[in-house]
Length: 184
Image (cartoon, rainbow, N blue to C red; front, side, top):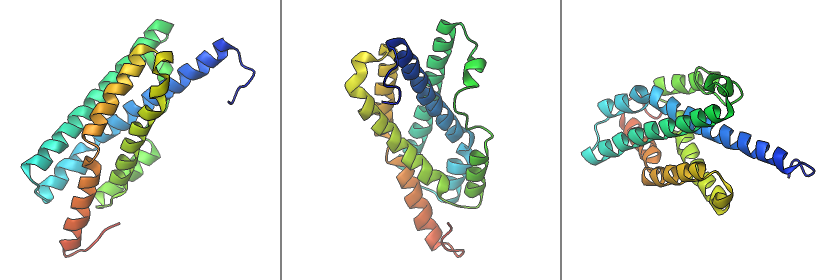
């Protein structure tokens, strides 16, 4: 659509870079979740005790997010190796979340009892589900490993899709009950 007169080789390169951007975005967002785990989850349940089932879902969520980060990072490593490029060089052209202003603002919002982080997590998790639905009709045209990674990612994201919303519900309900009232 963007390059109507491009050759098949040029379309392949555009497709590959878009696939790498997506894989990197997944790694980066999952890693961001892991970096703020204590602040976003462990401190929350310490302050607002929850059922063992809720705790178990939270543990599953973080376990699967770590697995996703490792899997997509491994894909990027394999791609870089196949192309004869160092992964750190490849990452220079891919999205980064760590130490960005956005990550710092979201961490600050978490520290103040805000909900922005969890609203973004809920939205991004839904986007990952949508992404799979959008690429699945083309899976025979994709690198088989890339298609399989997205399939597994979709399955696990679907399994814990309710988690960010449950955390939001917990925070909103418990903070309404606190003497300080609702925080934004």
